[in-house]
Length: 367
Image (tube, rainbow, N blue to C red; front, side, top):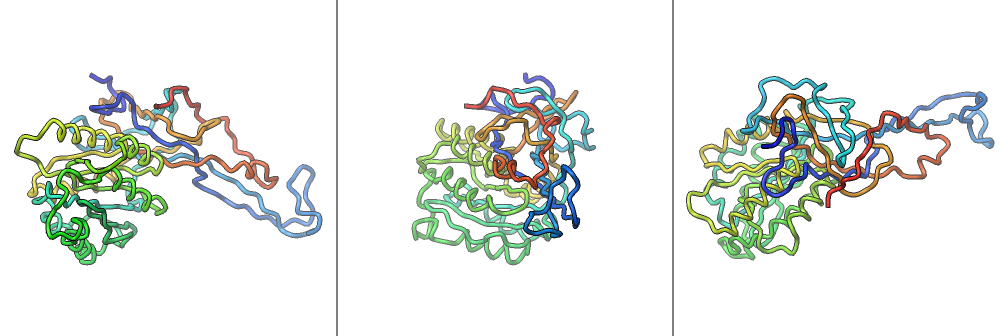
């Protein structure tokens, strides 16, 4: 049994969530001042422009990590958890407390819906079409944006960053479901379990990464992948780099499945969890409640904020989130952060960052 408060990842990996910590400047403030003459030691205006305003650049370098916290049976906690109980460790380094913790709340969501139209979700997808408008009306906010994709032999997109208009999104969902382009222009599913799921997910991430908001993929797929040259670890790394969480609903199967199919499901479940998401098998009649629970779960994620670690390096790093005295299911999402431009540090108008409170990274990076 895992010890209480550990960041739990099931099935395949002993690691906690993998994240890419190259460290982005998440907030920038610019201070302007008018002065006829700079005081000794201050940043002066250029000599050839006396009396002109000068600018000081102050960069707040922080990391934000959306973190899913549920009970061990994946239920919501009734009350918010005291922020003082959270600790974080990077690459098995010293534990530290985040400088700020809050619930995600009404932060804008950039949601991509992926429909596996290869046949395995034949009852669940019509249920989604019937319930989409009501769910969008109940659960999405004006600031949210939705994209819609479908995949069988090919991946197509019928909606890109649309506002949460119930009728518009229902039309675009229907267009994705009836398209023959996914089936290589055939009128029915043509690729079965050979859906190129890994490459499709990476394509979606690439198209989503530049969009604002909390980026999430909601898949309607059981997780079969059979026509891709990529590995699931490639998708895990891409999710970490882009800070995208993957959630999925799959039509509950009542028939025996092959060992290979069972392994695909297990791998996909691990992939979703490593990105800060979940998979859930459901029946079509359970879908309305499951959709509401999904958006509630997103908005109840904890946003953990802390300074960029001291002396960061690019690439994948492990992050472990613990909550004192709580045996919880904890899944931090990946974050996309970029190393500071060296030119900024040399710019005389840039105020140096105080790194005294920056967390220290360990030496046990993931493989």
